[in-house]
Length: 348
Image (cartoon, rainbow, N blue to C red; front, side, top):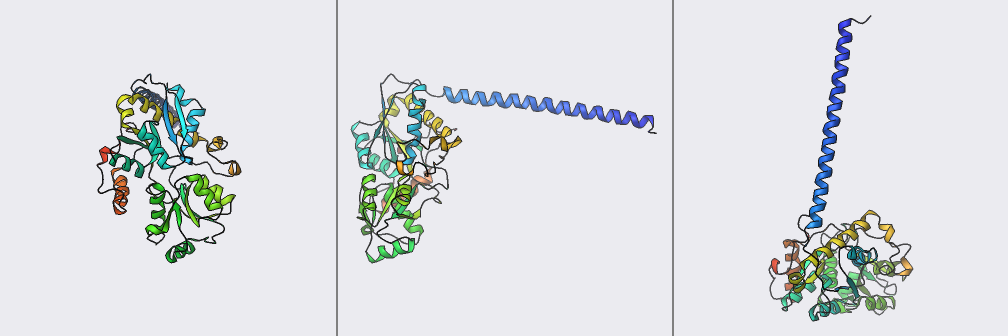
Protein backbone atom coordinates (compact mmCIF):
# COMPACT_ATOMS: atom_id res chain seq x y z
CA UNK A 1 0.00 0.00 0.00
CA UNK A 2 1.37 3.35 -0.97
CA UNK A 3 1.90 5.78 1.93
CA UNK A 4 -0.45 8.77 2.06
CA UNK A 5 2.47 11.14 1.86
CA UNK A 6 3.55 9.42 -1.33
CA UNK A 7 0.06 9.92 -2.78
CA UNK A 8 0.20 13.61 -1.91
CA UNK A 9 3.60 13.91 -3.55
CA UNK A 10 2.33 12.22 -6.70
CA UNK A 11 -0.76 14.45 -6.81
CA UNK A 12 1.34 17.56 -6.24
CA UNK A 13 3.76 16.51 -8.98
CA UNK A 14 0.84 15.90 -11.34
CA UNK A 15 -0.62 19.31 -10.60
CA UNK A 16 2.74 20.95 -11.11
CA UNK A 17 3.10 19.14 -14.41
CA UNK A 18 -0.35 20.25 -15.52
CA UNK A 19 0.34 23.83 -14.41
CA UNK A 20 3.66 23.75 -16.26
CA UNK A 21 2.03 22.42 -19.41
CA UNK A 22 -0.74 25.01 -19.16
CA UNK A 23 1.79 27.77 -18.72
CA UNK A 24 3.80 26.52 -21.69
CA UNK A 25 0.67 26.43 -23.85
CA UNK A 26 -0.15 30.02 -22.84
CA UNK A 27 3.39 31.09 -23.73
CA UNK A 28 3.24 29.32 -27.08
CA UNK A 29 -0.18 30.83 -27.79
CA UNK A 30 1.12 34.29 -26.94
CA UNK A 31 4.12 33.75 -29.20
CA UNK A 32 1.84 32.61 -32.01
CA UNK A 33 -0.24 35.76 -31.67
CA UNK A 34 2.92 37.89 -31.61
CA UNK A 35 4.35 36.18 -34.68
CA UNK A 36 1.05 36.53 -36.52
CA UNK A 37 0.85 40.20 -35.62
CA UNK A 38 4.47 40.74 -36.62
CA UNK A 39 3.93 38.97 -39.93
CA UNK A 40 0.75 40.97 -40.58
CA UNK A 41 2.55 44.18 -39.69
CA UNK A 42 5.42 43.28 -42.02
CA UNK A 43 3.00 42.47 -44.82
CA UNK A 44 1.10 45.69 -44.17
CA UNK A 45 4.36 47.66 -44.18
CA UNK A 46 5.37 46.01 -47.44
CA UNK A 47 2.02 46.89 -48.94
CA UNK A 48 2.29 50.47 -47.74
CA UNK A 49 5.88 51.20 -48.72
CA UNK A 50 5.14 52.08 -52.34
CA UNK A 51 4.37 55.62 -53.40
CA UNK A 52 1.02 56.11 -55.14
CA UNK A 53 0.73 54.74 -58.66
CA UNK A 54 0.77 57.41 -61.35
CA UNK A 55 -2.09 58.13 -63.74
CA UNK A 56 0.08 57.34 -66.78
CA UNK A 57 -1.75 54.83 -68.95
CA UNK A 58 0.80 52.11 -69.71
CA UNK A 59 4.08 50.66 -68.45
CA UNK A 60 5.86 49.12 -71.45
CA UNK A 61 8.19 46.19 -70.79
CA UNK A 62 10.52 44.67 -73.41
CA UNK A 63 10.82 40.89 -73.06
CA UNK A 64 13.31 38.56 -74.75
CA UNK A 65 12.34 34.95 -75.62
CA UNK A 66 13.97 33.50 -72.50
CA UNK A 67 12.52 31.63 -69.56
CA UNK A 68 13.32 34.19 -66.88
CA UNK A 69 10.54 36.36 -68.32
CA UNK A 70 7.98 33.80 -67.08
CA UNK A 71 7.07 35.85 -63.96
CA UNK A 72 6.18 38.80 -66.20
CA UNK A 73 3.69 36.71 -68.16
CA UNK A 74 2.30 35.04 -65.06
CA UNK A 75 1.77 38.44 -63.43
CA UNK A 76 -0.02 39.61 -66.56
CA UNK A 77 -2.21 36.51 -66.93
CA UNK A 78 -3.14 36.34 -63.22
CA UNK A 79 -4.01 40.04 -63.10
CA UNK A 80 -1.29 40.81 -60.55
CA UNK A 81 -0.30 44.04 -62.28
CA UNK A 82 -3.87 45.31 -62.52
CA UNK A 83 -4.46 44.41 -58.85
CA UNK A 84 -1.77 46.97 -58.03
CA UNK A 85 -3.22 49.64 -60.27
CA UNK A 86 -0.89 49.12 -63.23
CA UNK A 87 -1.53 48.66 -66.92
CA UNK A 88 1.47 46.75 -68.24
CA UNK A 89 2.19 46.02 -71.88
CA UNK A 90 4.66 43.19 -72.54
CA UNK A 91 6.45 43.86 -75.83
CA UNK A 92 8.44 40.99 -77.40
CA UNK A 93 11.97 41.83 -78.58
CA UNK A 94 14.18 39.38 -80.46
CA UNK A 95 17.62 40.60 -79.42
CA UNK A 96 19.49 42.59 -76.80
CA UNK A 97 20.04 45.27 -79.45
CA UNK A 98 16.28 45.67 -80.02
CA UNK A 99 15.71 45.94 -76.28
CA UNK A 100 18.43 48.56 -75.86
CA UNK A 101 17.07 50.63 -78.74
CA UNK A 102 13.59 50.45 -77.21
CA UNK A 103 14.85 51.75 -73.86
CA UNK A 104 16.96 54.44 -75.52
CA UNK A 105 14.17 55.77 -77.74
CA UNK A 106 11.50 55.76 -75.05
CA UNK A 107 9.50 52.94 -76.63
CA UNK A 108 10.14 50.92 -73.45
CA UNK A 109 10.27 51.90 -69.78
CA UNK A 110 11.41 48.51 -68.48
CA UNK A 111 13.75 45.96 -70.06
CA UNK A 112 14.45 42.26 -69.51
CA UNK A 113 18.14 43.06 -69.59
CA UNK A 114 21.62 41.87 -68.69
CA UNK A 115 24.36 43.61 -66.73
CA UNK A 116 26.51 44.16 -69.84
CA UNK A 117 23.67 45.84 -71.70
CA UNK A 118 22.92 48.09 -68.75
CA UNK A 119 26.55 49.09 -68.29
CA UNK A 120 26.99 49.85 -71.99
CA UNK A 121 23.86 51.98 -72.06
CA UNK A 122 24.89 53.98 -68.99
CA UNK A 123 28.42 54.36 -70.35
CA UNK A 124 26.96 55.80 -73.55
CA UNK A 125 25.04 58.42 -71.60
CA UNK A 126 21.66 56.76 -71.18
CA UNK A 127 20.17 57.05 -67.71
CA UNK A 128 18.80 53.75 -66.43
CA UNK A 129 19.18 51.52 -63.37
CA UNK A 130 19.20 47.83 -62.52
CA UNK A 131 16.39 47.21 -60.03
CA UNK A 132 16.36 43.41 -59.68
CA UNK A 133 18.39 40.29 -60.42
CA UNK A 134 15.95 37.99 -62.25
CA UNK A 135 17.66 34.62 -62.55
CA UNK A 136 16.69 31.12 -61.43
CA UNK A 137 17.46 29.46 -58.12
CA UNK A 138 21.03 28.25 -57.64
CA UNK A 139 21.60 24.94 -59.42
CA UNK A 140 19.01 25.49 -62.15
CA UNK A 141 20.66 25.87 -65.59
CA UNK A 142 19.96 29.12 -67.39
CA UNK A 143 22.53 29.29 -70.21
CA UNK A 144 24.31 26.46 -72.00
CA UNK A 145 26.78 26.05 -74.82
CA UNK A 146 24.92 23.72 -77.17
CA UNK A 147 26.50 21.88 -80.10
CA UNK A 148 24.62 20.81 -83.22
CA UNK A 149 23.91 17.18 -84.04
CA UNK A 150 25.73 17.60 -87.36
CA UNK A 151 28.92 18.84 -85.68
CA UNK A 152 29.58 15.66 -83.72
CA UNK A 153 31.05 17.82 -80.94
CA UNK A 154 29.13 16.13 -78.16
CA UNK A 155 31.60 16.65 -75.30
CA UNK A 156 33.39 19.70 -73.89
CA UNK A 157 36.73 18.18 -74.92
CA UNK A 158 35.65 17.80 -78.55
CA UNK A 159 34.31 21.34 -78.70
CA UNK A 160 37.46 22.81 -77.16
CA UNK A 161 39.67 20.82 -79.53
CA UNK A 162 37.67 22.14 -82.51
CA UNK A 163 37.95 25.70 -81.23
CA UNK A 164 41.70 25.33 -80.81
CA UNK A 165 42.15 24.18 -84.40
CA UNK A 166 39.71 26.78 -85.77
CA UNK A 167 37.16 24.31 -87.14
CA UNK A 168 34.27 25.49 -84.94
CA UNK A 169 32.79 28.69 -83.60
CA UNK A 170 30.20 29.50 -80.94
CA UNK A 171 27.28 31.72 -81.98
CA UNK A 172 26.63 34.48 -79.44
CA UNK A 173 25.25 37.97 -79.21
CA UNK A 174 28.34 40.19 -79.25
CA UNK A 175 28.81 42.38 -76.16
CA UNK A 176 25.91 40.69 -74.33
CA UNK A 177 25.43 38.24 -71.50
CA UNK A 178 25.67 35.37 -74.00
CA UNK A 179 29.27 36.25 -74.91
CA UNK A 180 30.14 36.73 -71.24
CA UNK A 181 28.59 33.39 -70.24
CA UNK A 182 30.20 31.55 -73.18
CA UNK A 183 33.58 32.91 -72.08
CA UNK A 184 32.97 31.99 -68.44
CA UNK A 185 31.84 28.44 -69.27
CA UNK A 186 34.81 27.84 -71.58
CA UNK A 187 37.29 29.27 -69.07
CA UNK A 188 35.81 27.14 -66.30
CA UNK A 189 36.35 24.14 -68.62
CA UNK A 190 40.02 25.07 -69.06
CA UNK A 191 39.98 26.98 -72.37
CA UNK A 192 40.49 30.72 -72.77
CA UNK A 193 38.52 31.66 -75.91
CA UNK A 194 39.69 34.10 -78.58
CA UNK A 195 37.54 36.67 -80.33
CA UNK A 196 37.68 34.50 -83.47
CA UNK A 197 36.01 31.65 -81.56
CA UNK A 198 32.73 33.55 -81.64
CA UNK A 199 30.21 34.19 -84.41
CA UNK A 200 27.83 37.11 -84.08
CA UNK A 201 24.18 35.99 -84.29
CA UNK A 202 22.29 38.50 -82.19
CA UNK A 203 18.68 37.25 -82.54
CA UNK A 204 18.15 34.27 -80.26
CA UNK A 205 15.56 32.47 -82.46
CA UNK A 206 17.88 32.76 -85.48
CA UNK A 207 20.75 31.38 -83.39
CA UNK A 208 18.62 28.34 -82.55
CA UNK A 209 17.56 27.85 -86.17
CA UNK A 210 21.11 28.08 -87.50
CA UNK A 211 22.21 25.52 -84.94
CA UNK A 212 19.39 23.19 -86.01
CA UNK A 213 20.33 23.57 -89.67
CA UNK A 214 23.99 22.86 -88.96
CA UNK A 215 25.02 26.34 -90.11
CA UNK A 216 26.86 26.86 -86.80
CA UNK A 217 28.68 24.20 -84.82
CA UNK A 218 27.75 25.60 -81.41
CA UNK A 219 25.64 28.33 -79.83
CA UNK A 220 25.07 29.86 -76.43
CA UNK A 221 21.34 29.37 -75.73
CA UNK A 222 19.07 30.21 -72.81
CA UNK A 223 16.32 28.02 -71.46
CA UNK A 224 13.87 26.78 -72.63
CA UNK A 225 15.56 26.86 -76.04
CA UNK A 226 18.37 24.63 -74.76
CA UNK A 227 15.79 22.00 -73.86
CA UNK A 228 14.14 22.39 -77.27
CA UNK A 229 17.48 22.01 -79.06
CA UNK A 230 18.56 18.96 -77.07
CA UNK A 231 15.28 17.08 -76.78
CA UNK A 232 13.82 17.79 -80.22
CA UNK A 233 16.69 18.73 -82.53
CA UNK A 234 19.33 16.26 -81.35
CA UNK A 235 21.77 18.89 -80.08
CA UNK A 236 23.98 18.44 -77.01
CA UNK A 237 24.40 20.80 -74.06
CA UNK A 238 28.12 20.36 -73.49
CA UNK A 239 28.56 23.11 -70.88
CA UNK A 240 25.93 24.64 -68.56
CA UNK A 241 25.89 27.32 -65.87
CA UNK A 242 24.10 25.22 -63.23
CA UNK A 243 27.04 25.61 -60.84
CA UNK A 244 27.71 29.27 -61.65
CA UNK A 245 27.30 31.57 -58.64
CA UNK A 246 25.99 34.59 -60.55
CA UNK A 247 24.22 34.79 -63.90
CA UNK A 248 24.18 38.51 -64.81
CA UNK A 249 20.56 38.94 -65.91
CA UNK A 250 18.43 41.76 -64.56
CA UNK A 251 15.39 43.95 -64.85
CA UNK A 252 16.31 47.53 -65.73
CA UNK A 253 14.18 50.66 -65.80
CA UNK A 254 14.81 54.09 -67.22
CA UNK A 255 15.90 56.83 -64.84
CA UNK A 256 13.00 58.91 -66.08
CA UNK A 257 10.59 56.25 -64.88
CA UNK A 258 12.34 56.11 -61.50
CA UNK A 259 12.23 59.88 -61.15
CA UNK A 260 8.67 60.49 -62.36
CA UNK A 261 6.86 57.26 -61.41
CA UNK A 262 8.59 55.57 -58.46
CA UNK A 263 5.30 54.14 -57.24
CA UNK A 264 4.82 52.39 -60.59
CA UNK A 265 8.27 50.79 -60.31
CA UNK A 266 7.64 49.69 -56.73
CA UNK A 267 4.25 48.14 -57.51
CA UNK A 268 5.56 46.56 -60.70
CA UNK A 269 8.32 44.79 -58.78
CA UNK A 270 5.88 43.78 -56.03
CA UNK A 271 3.59 42.18 -58.63
CA UNK A 272 6.61 40.50 -60.18
CA UNK A 273 7.51 39.03 -56.79
CA UNK A 274 3.91 37.86 -56.31
CA UNK A 275 4.28 35.95 -59.58
CA UNK A 276 7.65 34.50 -58.50
CA UNK A 277 6.10 33.30 -55.24
CA UNK A 278 3.26 31.63 -57.14
CA UNK A 279 5.67 29.88 -59.51
CA UNK A 280 7.99 28.73 -56.73
CA UNK A 281 5.05 27.32 -54.75
CA UNK A 282 3.90 25.15 -57.66
CA UNK A 283 6.08 25.29 -60.81
CA UNK A 284 4.02 22.61 -62.57
CA UNK A 285 0.98 24.88 -62.49
CA UNK A 286 2.75 27.08 -65.04
CA UNK A 287 3.96 24.41 -67.43
CA UNK A 288 1.28 25.33 -69.94
CA UNK A 289 2.28 28.94 -70.29
CA UNK A 290 2.67 28.56 -74.03
CA UNK A 291 4.13 32.03 -74.48
CA UNK A 292 7.41 30.92 -72.88
CA UNK A 293 7.59 27.14 -73.35
CA UNK A 294 7.74 25.93 -76.98
CA UNK A 295 5.02 23.45 -77.90
CA UNK A 296 7.38 20.50 -78.61
CA UNK A 297 8.69 20.52 -75.02
CA UNK A 298 5.56 21.55 -73.11
CA UNK A 299 5.25 18.12 -71.52
CA UNK A 300 8.91 17.60 -70.64
CA UNK A 301 10.45 20.97 -69.78
CA UNK A 302 11.13 21.37 -66.06
CA UNK A 303 9.68 24.72 -65.04
CA UNK A 304 12.32 26.47 -62.89
CA UNK A 305 12.02 28.09 -59.51
CA UNK A 306 13.26 31.68 -59.29
CA UNK A 307 15.80 33.36 -57.04
CA UNK A 308 14.87 35.57 -54.09
CA UNK A 309 14.50 39.30 -54.75
CA UNK A 310 17.78 41.21 -54.70
CA UNK A 311 20.04 43.37 -56.84
CA UNK A 312 23.54 42.35 -57.97
CA UNK A 313 26.17 42.99 -55.32
CA UNK A 314 29.05 45.40 -55.76
CA UNK A 315 31.44 42.44 -56.09
CA UNK A 316 29.30 40.84 -58.80
CA UNK A 317 29.06 44.09 -60.75
CA UNK A 318 32.81 44.59 -60.41
CA UNK A 319 33.52 41.10 -61.77
CA UNK A 320 31.36 41.63 -64.85
CA UNK A 321 32.81 45.07 -65.50
CA UNK A 322 36.35 43.69 -65.20
CA UNK A 323 35.56 41.35 -68.11
CA UNK A 324 34.04 44.24 -70.07
CA UNK A 325 37.24 46.23 -69.64
CA UNK A 326 39.29 43.17 -70.62
CA UNK A 327 37.49 42.77 -73.95
CA UNK A 328 37.36 46.51 -74.69
CA UNK A 329 33.65 47.07 -74.18
CA UNK A 330 34.31 49.89 -71.70
CA UNK A 331 37.45 51.82 -70.76
CA UNK A 332 36.93 51.67 -67.00
CA UNK A 333 34.34 50.36 -64.53
CA UNK A 334 31.42 52.62 -63.68
CA UNK A 335 30.48 53.41 -60.06
CA UNK A 336 28.01 50.95 -58.56
CA UNK A 337 25.54 53.68 -57.60
CA UNK A 338 25.30 54.82 -61.22
CA UNK A 339 24.15 51.35 -62.26
CA UNK A 340 22.03 49.90 -59.45
CA UNK A 341 19.01 51.14 -57.48
CA UNK A 342 18.59 48.79 -54.49
CA UNK A 343 15.71 50.53 -52.70
CA UNK A 344 12.91 48.38 -54.14
CA UNK A 345 14.42 45.09 -52.95
CA UNK A 346 15.89 46.38 -49.68
CA UNK A 347 14.54 44.50 -46.69
CA UNK A 348 12.91 41.77 -48.78
